[in-house]
Length: 183
Image 1 (cartoon, rainbow, N blue to C red):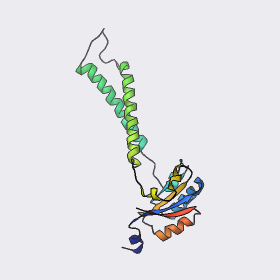
Image 2: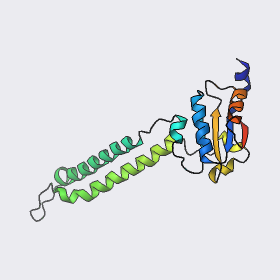
Image 3: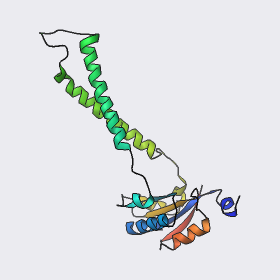
Image 4: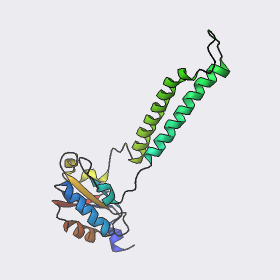
């Protein structure tokens, strides 16, 4: 176990606070260019280009939602078709048993229902929510991340992490403050 690893045993990472979204974006790009891969930014609103600067891969959420929506449409339509033509056929007034226009509304509703629930549940799972506790919550002044503060945290799990080097790197990006984040 190296000295840097021994010191990082109870350490989550090092976090820097910035005043503007431009500063956190520049710092994230510089950290990415410096070779850091395990980092996260905390901002009160979406910052254009920050996902790319952090090296986050695009999400496949849209494809999952589409697949579940199509499954919902097929399931809703099949359920109506099966119940009206196979399970309990009723010939009322000469109406055909497979009268597809009557199935459109329920098919649409089941499509929207499954797609919406899938989007919500996958989004919560992907974001690791609900998360009542996270180590960065103990950072002094971190509550500003919901109002007007911008934070960049380089995690101790990063292969290039050395607390002294990371602190020096972050201090070189002109932050308001740099804090050590304990687990």
